[in-house]
Each structure stands twice: as C-alpha cells, then as structure tokens.
Image 1 (cartoon, rainbow over the protein chains, first blue to last red):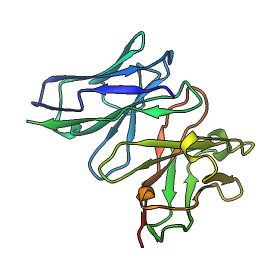
Image 2 (image 1 turned 60 degrees about the vertical axis):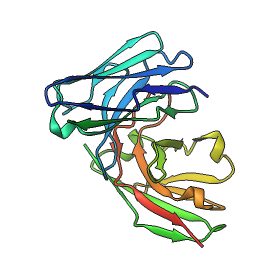
Image 3 (image 1 turned 90 degrees about the vertical axis):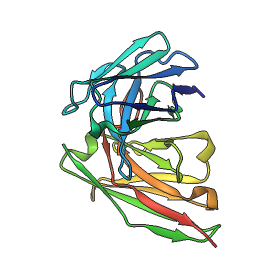
Image 4 (image 1 turned 180 degrees about the horizontal axis):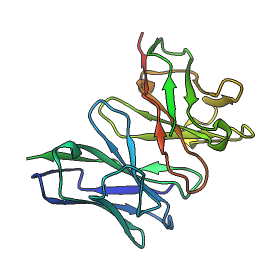
Length: 107
Length: 119
C-alpha cells in the first residue's frame, strides 16, 4: 500500500503565522492528494482536493501544492478557528490511505 | 450541497456484528458513491472501503476483506456498513462519506457513529 508520511506530527503557532504541513507519498500518486481538517469532536472536512484545488467555501488562506511525491498544505495567516488536526489522503491507488495527522495548536 | 445522517451509537459484545446506516439527502443519490472511514479513540483516520451506488460494486481495504459488507439502497437513499466478528479493536467512530473511486475526494461527511465493543 502507498504510505503517506506527514510532518510534523504537531505544531504550535501564533495567530497570523504562516503554517506549512508536508505529506510525502511512498510512490507516485500523481496529483490525487486531498487535505482534510478535523476540529475537536467533529467530523473531518475537505479543504483541498487534487493537490491544489480549493474546496468550495474554504477560506483562501488555505492552499496546497505538489512537488513530485511531496505535498504541502499551507495556511497563510493562521486564525484561532484553524486549530485542529489536518490529514492528507491519497485516492490514486485502489487502497486509499491517510497520513497520520498533524495537530495544530494556537500559542 | 447535501447532508448525511448516520444512525445512533451502538454497544456490542465481542464476536457480535453491527450495522451502521447513513441516510443521504439534498443531492442526487446515484451521482456519488460512498466510502466508510473509522477513527479509533485518540487515533487517526482509517479508510475501510467504498461502495458504488450505481451498481453495488465494492472495494474494501485489505485488512477488512471478509469481515465487512458495504451496501446501498437507492430507494431510501441510504448506505449501510456491516462489520462482523467484532473485537475491542473495532471500538471507534465510523463515518460515512460521499466519494469513492479513482481520484475522488471525500467531500461530504456524516456526523459519525460511535461503536463500542465491550464484554
């Protein structure tokens, strides 16, 4: 199965900071990587699909990019409501897989 | 945009089976298929598989093959997940999610169903 390795596993940042989360695929997944946000006690929510496309109604401070098998989620100007855990996921192979998650805390 | 409403919490004994339902509304049911994702306490997300609403085709995660069955009923716009031979390791929140097949994102999530397996 394709492994999705996320880093860091957690981070703490201040309001207004630029935050970057990385996900590395163990094999080619083309552009078929999606990013989700899960707030405490809630179901996950789709933020970015196909590596860089912003899901409808998601704030423009969220963006995604790809370089080979490395994928990045960037939050440009962290807000208090962005606290939660972020997951990458590949939908390229027949066996879908998630990264292990990155917990974002606000300083 | 749509809504997915799942059935209520379940408590089961080891060795039993559980069925979780997921009723869809607000969009054309047959246009999208369903995935199921679970989350054990304090853990990350685990994809379990998906089921096509148009022809019932399924694709299960290897670790669940033979122990889960995913189905849909277009007449009631409902998706179902059955998990058999439950153990304590199956204690988790189970989410139904719209989206399945090559390259598709998981764009609409149910509220989750808590399944607890305890003797």
